Image (cartoon, rainbow, N blue to C red; front, side, top):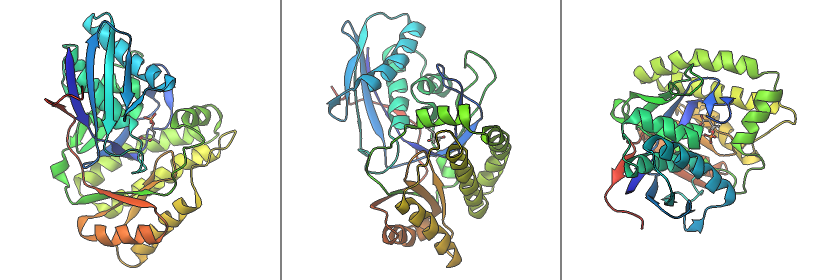
Length: 327
Ligand code: PMV
């Protein structure tokens, strides 16, 4: 009844931005991401007679964290016919400092470890569906490489999960540089920001139409390993996501001055002949796409522009079960 798994974060190139079902975490649109190597979360789960409890990076879960973990555990217990509780210990090798959300990797590792510990199937599809219940973007961290989260149509969410479109080996020279621009906690969580945006932004309907139309294009550009085409698509999708939130009521702006400086530096690099393009999640820290041969130059340029820390990643592997447990 105990298992451990490792999963990697992912960065979306066509973003998930808005739920059509808040409880089951069903999106209004599909989305597309790259799983990142180097960074990972590891989680051990043991089902027992105690209450649900656990820790994240050495600290007991906050009430909010435990509530989200419980949603996933409840779904697993319901499917496996289990009673009782579980102990969960999770740690990541990028304690916020990479400027990337660790929730996707954490919930992906939790979904895989808990499925195994409960005796449920550990194939990608059912585990992706479970990971989605913890954090939407986590469903795209079950498999490595380039993954698409299918929107699905069903009310029960059973057709809303991620599939691998291309393995990491399809385009191993792509580099994704996470540029940390601000360390303070975000004023608004991505969860609250997307809800406010769906409910109040006059541009949200346009977002749905546009993001949906970008999905076949992002697949074709990755198939062709077209860095300029993919970079342009990633930039316009990020700007359009942020435009929907800037137009919400109250307005939501995740950009900090250093964010804009890094984004402008990517454009300056292009004027100098270096192909570098940004994307930006619901926070101040851009991720810059470039080719492996340019990564050292891009990394120092981003630092010069004001990034506090730059973490260079390549396309990463599938989530996997580990033999060594954390307790
Ligand atoms: O999975 P959540 O609730 O952390 O939302 C993630 C939303 C974005 O990171 C902004 C976009 C995405 O597709 O990952």
